[in-house]
Image (cartoon, rainbow, N blue to C red):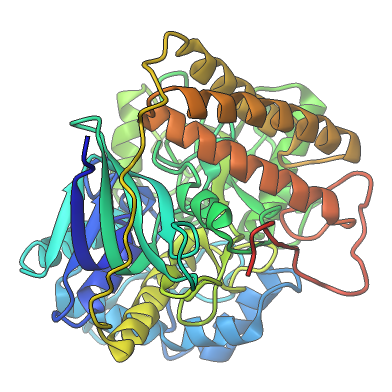
Length: 535
């Protein structure tokens, strides 16, 4: 059977803020394909509640935002990446406002309308611009509404990338990325997408953990594909656990925004007592790694299933106007946040490391870019500061678009690419292998490679992931592929990379906390893993 082939100038894998920003910013002389595993807005951007960190207030400064980011990053931020991102923040906000993003406003003392800014953990000023408690949704819908009017952009829904194609991989000189094999979920067939430029905007890998705030799409696909293609990855041991996810049997992956703590919400033990003052003088506004570890410590010390977040001391109208979605969702589950505390637990939230890129989003492979959460730019260091993630998506999406636009369209290349070969595979009668290995992976990652780590736990996880990787590789070789199999394969790869990175770091820094090495090393250095086929 001949593989269906499509050709575009630019192939964007992922339809969140990073990918859509790049598509909007590209010259419309480029033909662009955007792949989404589900509906275009079914990703982490859409569910982001808090906002976008930007220097917009006269009492704030670039220097302060840079300093706060460097401090949260625990000595591992790349200062050039931080400066680059922060300095572009006002420009990004202006662009979003021009596109029609409806950020919250308030009336100041002079009677003038101004943006309402909130404060989140690690920030020394109110600098988080937001649209109530659904900022990501507002941004995602606005970007999408703009893009669907662009005649040069085509969305492909229900498409899952299988693997990248490089010249070297198909037996030719050079190592440019020239496309990808992609599974069409509706037909079940693998299609060939040829492209001069390929952009990985696939988000993070928090689905590798049992408890996560992320949607189901966050399975580390871009990181795994880039690694298999020959790209280096960096700092994957730094997995951010959001301190406050709703704890309820019927609440799958529902985040309770950090903005509640920015507006005065208190963390409480089951007996109603406050505890953050024992861990950090910044109490509820400490960086996320500190808050998550404090909650984890108290839950283990007391043997309780959760702690509580209480904002009920604020005016009910204030709560419902600033946090309408959180209020509505909790109310559906029988929790009135205007009168009662919210049961919460930490959950895997953000992948701070990723595919090594330069400041244009260019990876180690020519014409392959990575932007957003799938990338490692050095911005976040050992711990991402709140609301810098959406900013990063749009700053580096813009930078990559400018870089590609400047390079222009190369002449048509005639590199033969073989059809997808399914001649040696059959339909599986052992789907239980996928579901069992999926559950086992996510559980041992949570237990052994979670908020608090030890050498013994990490080595135990490494042994398990190596065995499971062998099983999944054998399964992949013998049976027709499916979305679940592709995600499991990618999560196995990323889990192994996370564990290897964590084993290499012999210190506790930022989000990586190990009981065997509780102190900082004298020199801060990145953990860079190099694939066997690098170069």
